Image (cartoon, rainbow, N blue to C red; front, side, top):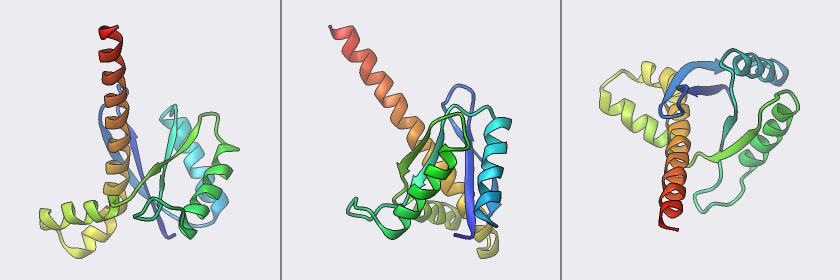
Length: 140
């Protein structure tokens, strides 16, 4: 609600890199900033973390995120998709804690790291799908 982690992939869609965290203000400002970044990075897709429950069900927050995604779709020329973000913040905190950085620095970095992990999981999913498709195509 206060911050939004941001990440972009390299041109080949192999690795994710974190961008500076967006300090949330008003929804219109947040949407506009994402629109600007989308243009700056020539995005083909905007991926938004979907905070579903551990059991995989909808939550109050996931409904809010879906509303945000719909507003963003109206502003962007590229598709906007939701992607399961379960445990990305937990993993980001674990990684940062293991790195030994201070709590203050961790708090500033966790959203960026979580966004990077989210995007990397999506990129790996796409790579696996492509590999599976190529393998099944070769077997036919």
